[in-house]
Image (cartoon, rainbow, N blue to C red; front, side, top):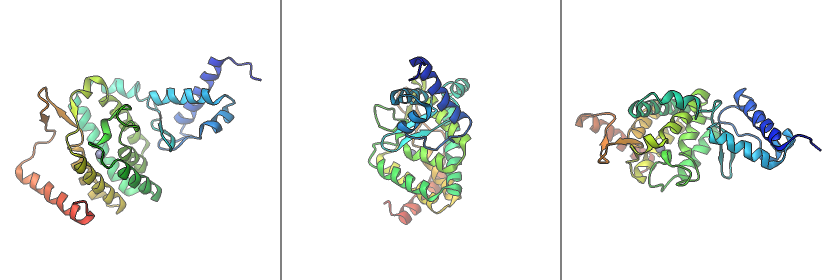
Length: 260
Ligand SMILES: [Zn+2]
């Protein structure tokens, strides 16, 4: 029987999990062993493991998805390191940075996705159908997933740990009360479905050019900044001619994929 105290066991368990994440033994995007396995490996009870997982989830390093397991989301405690850094920037700057991450992830996902990634993305797109809005900004009380699984999986498919870590930290920052109140989802459920289907189609075809354009179009209206009167503050001003080009591309894709 172990002579260690409960708090010692808790500390050791936390250190064990954290070490496996920070050293890359469990890379970002991978699923960690299940609770009973970890309890046996570390030599502690399952409740001690559960507590440590919860604690690492609260700082953005792990995420538990019901029915799928617990995944590594960041090799660093995003809520402290990156959030402190991002605190110095305006919401406009952070949202623009998020758009850059999403577009790069879409491009990389088209190039590096595996068949498993594609299956997972297709499932997520189906599961999130009918959401009244893109769940990127939903919190735990509004959805079982902390944010859109489709977007998360896209970063997994991109196979770039830095992009995934920065994305997790950026979303944490956007969810802080100071920013949340100024953000809104403006697209309808059907627009979201069409957008996701379009991104997915490009990734399926490994077409990184279409992936870039369809994601740029999507992130332009999935999360936007609103003013005091709840009016959208456009991130990118467009001329009618430019908007027409975007509409034509959207329409052509919708015809081809059959999402009309
Ligand atoms: Zn989306």
